[in-house]
Each structure stands twice: as C-alpha cells, then as structure tokens.
Length: 187
Image (cartoon, rainbow, N blue to C red):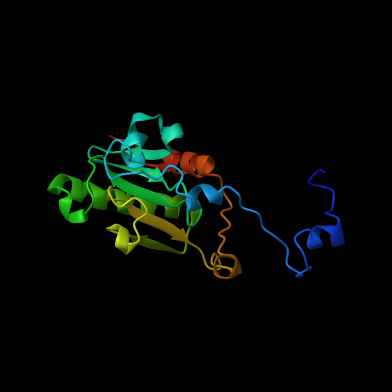
C-alpha cells in the first residue's frame, strides 16, 4: 500500500476491535525514549550521552556549537522544533558544581541560543530551564543540561494534551544545520 492510497475505511477502524471513530498518529520512534534507549544505565561519564557527543562529528553528535567549557546540542527527544540543550563538557550534576568559567559560558551560550533561534525560526517565546536530580525530572540527572525550547503561538495543540504526542515539524538534522549555520563564528 502506498502513502497515496486511502486506507480501507471500515477494516482499518476495526482491526483492534470495536470502531472508536479516532484516527491514529503513529509515532513508533518515541518507544526508544519510553524504553530509555540510549539512557545511561549508571551515572558515570562512561555511559553518558552528553560526554560521548563531543567525541563525534558535529553532524553525528547533533552538536550546534562547541565552546571552551560548554557546548550546544540538539535534544534527541525534542519538546518542539529547534529544542536545544546547553551542556558543560565536564560531567557534573548540578549548576552549583560549575566553576566560574563554566557558569559564565553556560549563561552566554543560553543567551546566544535564544538569539540564533530568534534569527532563524522567529519564535514568539521560550521555555528555558534545568531539571536537577532525577526526582526533579532530569532524564539524565548525572550530567547538567539546560533546555532552550522555542515556542510559537498555537504550537501546543491537542496532541500533547489528549494524545500524549508531540508533532515536531522539522528533522533534528535539518534543525542542527540551520542553527549551526547561523551561530556566530569565532573572531
């Protein structure tokens, strides 16, 4: 069956039992996130994806920018198109664990990420934040990371609320390329 062919009407709705009138938006790639695929099995830097990313090429590691003590990377499971993370290279858990140089660059990269997003995607707002500790909701609690999530009026539709699904209209690789190309070059 090709994408152009319509689904059989009654058969498609009754495959799993009684028809319910809902269409399905299948997102099987989200199972990797749900099952914790790629999530470290321990809190060491050996298993940490944020420690492993800088050893890869920018494209393979989804790195947008490399600074002296911190870097900017795409979120592998984004809340929105262009969802970035600022991470220190050093494997630390809490903001208070950063030294002065790291803390300054961490803040500067957060501000620069917002400026690049404004230039390339014209968001109308941002969600910015850190979840520190597993109990606070950090998916990878052992390595500090700050979320920069661009927001647009109407981007929060019924899918996340009703279907617990987020539609992200841009591939990670495309967003990384767009943001990396717009990031100011070192002088």
